[in-house]
Image (cartoon, rainbow, N blue to C red; front, side, top):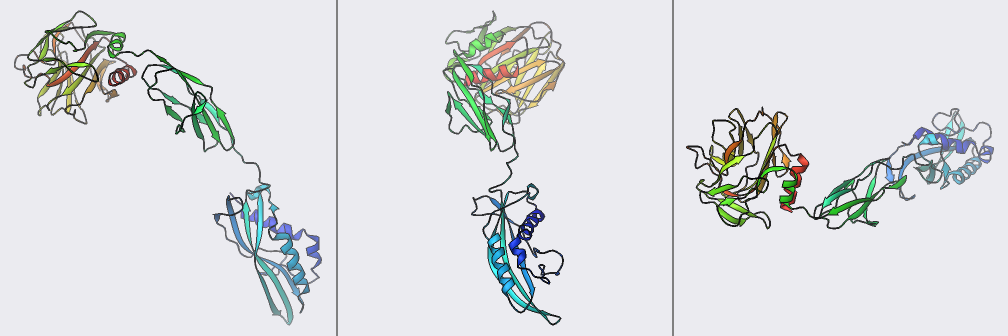
Length: 453
C-alpha cells in the first residue's frame, strides 16, 4: 500500500535539500502559504486514486498538489521567478526515488500550471509564486524487489496403470505466492487448454508420460515426468470374476432354457416368456422380461448371504411400476431360513431391500429410473449398514443388522411367492452377480465404466 505521508515527505526533502534553491531566499521569505509557519514547503491539498498511467502501464498513485515556492516581501518578482525556475527544474518529469516506507519505488512530478498573485499584509507587499504539480507514484525504476515465494510442489502428480481405453485424472498441489498458473505436457509437448491443477487424459491405448509446470511472477517449477502405463483391455466379465463373484449370470445366453453361471454351479431355468439374445449395453446381450411380470429365472440357489455381501445387476425398465407395485430384481419368498427381497416400486422411484424377514429399508431414488435407459445397481452390505450405488455413485448408507443365515432358493427378475407371481421385472436385464464381500467404491466404479465403455 502506498503511504501518502512518506511520498509528501520525500517531495519536501527534495526541495529543501537543494542549495541553489535556498540561495534565492533572503531573510523574511516564507515558504508556507497556509500559515507562514516553520515548514519551508507544504503540500496544501492532495487526493489519491489508482489509475492506469502511461508510465509503463502499471497501477499508479496520483496526487494533485499545490507547492508554494516563494513568498517574498518585496514589490519585485525576481526571487519568485528564480525560485519558480529552479523548483521546476528539480521536479518536472524528474524521477525521484522513494524510501521503502513509501510503499513504492519511484515518484515523477508533472507541471500543471503556474500560480502568481500579490497580497498586501499590514502595509507590506507580498509576492506569491507557486505551481501545481501532478505527482505519479509507481513501482518503476528503483522499486524494491517484489516480495514473493516461487512455486513449489507439495504433491506432484503420480503415475498409474490403467486398462486400454480407460482414462485417468492427474492432479498436482503447489504452494507459492498467487497467482499460480499451470501447464501440462505430454511427452514434453504442451497440451492445449491443459492449464488447471488437474488434467483428465481421455481414453488411452498406449503408455504415455506427463508432467506439469507451475509458475508465478517469482519462479517456475516442473514436476518429474510420470508414466501412465496402459495394459490390455479388461472385459466386464473378467473384471466381475477377478473381483471374486461367487455367482455370476451374464444373461447373454443366445438360446436354450438355461442361464449359465460363470462363477459357480448355479444355472437357472428360464421361464415365463423371457426373451433371449436381446440388445444389451454396447455390443453385449441381455434378456428381456415380459410386461405381464411372469418372467423369471428359477429355481435358483443363491450362495449364503452373511453379514457382508454385494448384489449387482444392470437393468433397463420397459414400463413404470405403478404406485405401491413391485418390480423384482432378486426375490425369495418370505418365511423360512434365509429369505430376502430386492425390488423397485412406486413408479420406479423407490427401492426396497428386505433381509431374512427381519429388517428392510426403503430408499427414495430422488430421480425415478428412466424408461429405456440402462442403469447399473450395486447393493453392498457390511459393518452394520447397506449402501446402494446407482451408476457408480453411492447413496447415503442405511443402518441395518446383517446376521445372515443359510443358502437361499430364490429367483432372478421375478417371484416364486404365492400371490406375488406377477411381481416380475418388466424390461431388460443383464450381468447379475453375487459377492461374499462388499465391493469397494473404486471396484464398483470400475465395473460401471468398463461396461459403458
